Length: 448
Image 1 (cartoon, one colour):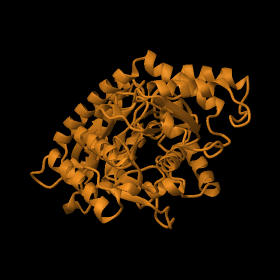
Image 2 (spheres, one colour; image 1 turned 135 degrees about the horizontal axis):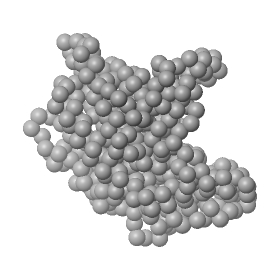
Image 3 (cartoon, one colour; image 1 turned 120 degrees about the vertical axis):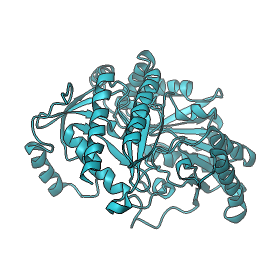
Image 4 (cartoon, one colour; image 1 turned 135 degrees about the vertical axis):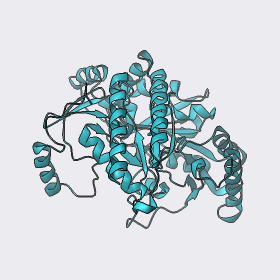
């Protein structure tokens, strides 16, 4: 099939990528996982060119960090202008306007009509850790509840809140105390005959029982929830479930933290995924696509909650760097001016429609799901071939990047393929990438 955007001059990985890969293995620890054996030279929009001159379509978007694409012109220009003024005076030493401008903007666009305040950090894990600190300080309580299959980061507290043991937690204990896991709906794996309402009712009842069996609600500071589970497999809960969590929080004086690190900034067709559920959280964490890949994260919440810590109790030397702030302001402007929320809905519909067609052709496709442009399909195991879903996913991903499409897996069992293509991807690029996925699956099925 003729490719309009994918241009493969060498096999992947090519000779230069292999040379750099050897150096990587020599000088960088193996624990820093790499999804593809490719070294990038430049990127623009949804396309990347590697050091061997191969042009690939990016369906991974730096794990959701590039909703506005590689090197968006507005962001590049904002960075170029800022870099000539000052790099990092440290907000705790000398304040600067972009920090305040971004805080004001996030207070405006995040869900909730109440007064809010925002401060900045470096990474998603830091945002989660600080949201928990604030919740504990405000409530005077200790316990934090997260959900099965949830992912909140790799630092100690964030890792303690994360559910997947391998690879994220294995061998790294002991973990932070007073952290507990709640069940989270997974409708595709519900018992036969069960409806989503049945699943939601059961789980919400189990949470009430948890307060009787494990930890009294009066000791719980916060429940942290991903509106759509990211690393957990792009599992989308119902509006009833998320609203049920909000009601439980209200009933017992528990704060609700929405972890929007992967779901935020337009990915799901709204600026924040929690908006789909008509729920307003008390605190919200952001990172990844907030600044087109420039390291920065944020915590936004009700003013009275955010003001609970004393001066000096939250922050960090590099938190809210000027470069991250101006990049984030440019990202928000792009999303608003280029109607990327609407574009996310269009992209998501095209992807899920095509995945549905692929599912009809191949028995290994189990479930197709997603919200907006946060889409995935789940691969089932084939017992008579002695192949697990995870093994099949590995084969499909390998064939995809060798054909010029970069993607990643997800899910507790590693059997989900997720798509986080930049929202600036063209229809033609999207179609070409989906064609490659179709071809890769066909070959895996044929070779089975």
